[in-house]
Length: 274
Ligand code: A2P
Image (cartoon, rainbow, N blue to C red; front, side, top):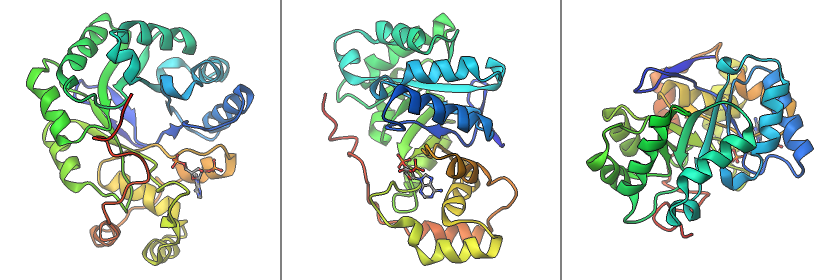
């Protein structure tokens, strides 16, 4: 596993498990987390919205891996922010997960006109020490600029939809310039698009004896982006994390970048409503 250093010195595993809609029941969620940890995952990403924090927390507490070897992210939902309840929401996430601290707490989506004020509340949560790092999610450059105008603590991370059909080079460069680590959700493009059938990905995969999914995940590592693919399937979980024994050339990285279509599978961050 490779780690990346956040702007406050803490280290984040560059491959984590996304958990949005990972399972039907709490038992499914629990089993998915246990199998992911079994095959080597040490980074789990959840959110208030996903309603799976309790099952994830139980798996974390049962798995036998020391807490300080695991990296847990959760996120504040917009309605809690809009109603002034972000602190309550954070406490509830801690309680549901039933762990002593959150490694990374994120603003799940930007709220138009409230980016700065929301961030100031996040800084208060950081000051309690119960969130080791704070950041944002789904923030475009103009949202981040509002945050940076007021921030005394810069966001450590920005988690965004990104894959070879949505490369977001400019946003990622902006984040790097401000020492904000980018994380890619739906790094495999989700099941809505046939990304993994792309000829380029298959050809590169053949060269390294890797699957197209492994090539895409490795491409994230090469561009300094953390990836959080979701899989409930133990074999796919294992294969998605098996990307640290090969490297892509800069030419291959460029070829993958050339698949960009600026096309999203999820909602545009300017169109989210609560
Ligand atoms: P599964 O859980 O059956 O593995 P997201 O876009 O939210 O990250 O979801 C990723 C989707 O891609 C999930 O439906 C997951 O299904 C599937 N998936 C995860 N890893 C792979 C892989 N290596 N190859 C193909 N599909 C994958």
